[in-house]
Length: 442
Image (tube, rainbow, N blue to C red):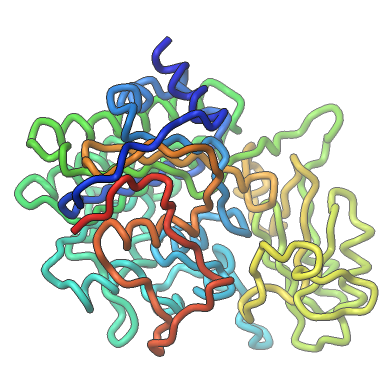
């Protein structure tokens, strides 16, 4: 009952802030991203151990059941937003893949640290507060690549762990991902001797299972339960080592998850426009619920837009710059912030339950769950811990873009800047979630 009352109180905005007093010591921040955790399953019934933590810290726990990811609702752009506090039009990671507009070149992955155009928190700490200890443990190898060190551009965390450090038999054979148990075990081992000031963990099982089986079955529910156990292991370790009183734990997701399995009403949920778009001179990069369409020659875009608009399952055709007869992203969805050269000249949006797929990729075509579009933007966000400077928030629906500014405030850091040293404009960046702070650290 106590768990239900806590969740209900935060939902209806009846939570109260603790009184402001003397500044608290600087906390140690633990950011855990449960990849693909849909807000529908972030409940006391599905994650009892996590919600028990909230119940044990009622005056220092905030639950935002409908926080907002950035577009596109994919892993790479949202993890970069979580660690930079800016939208994709500023940091440049506009999806999991892109086309570099070189004729004849295939689409490329967007998982290289050199491509991030704004400092990450790891970089800010290494440049301005190198005495702070940082750790990154990522269940997906691509995220370790994304937050690696690049001379003159980005700094890696002091400790960077990837599944590639495991024997092959202890990684998922299809994806190379580490299980949540392996990732958490590695993180706890790495932080046993020295407590990190900032630890960032990615738990990958929920996303992997959601793709393979869909978000509505028992497999997904079991994966959510496994993430709950991993989170409990972290909290238990912090308590056992006497670190909980100085800890802030932030738990969130990078996107939700939608079923794309065939149904009687939707027998053909796969949209494969690559060949048709190539015929008119465009290149398509599928991203689940959205598809980027690029053209070396802008004159082909009206024809590409017409092909897309006539295709079953496509509900929106948008342009990044004016194209005759096509609405622009900024006009229709100004909060998407996708005006960057790595984004497509056109952006296609799929009907909920449908997915864009590269027809040459049979693995993606067989997925039973996917994400990428506006239907998967809602994510859970939890802020809790034993640190005395936390408050219980009163309502609100922050975005993932607000997490990095909040961490910067907690650790006494300046905000991430562009790599040339200039500030990111306020309209392209988040702001600290002041409601969760009863006190500023000294």
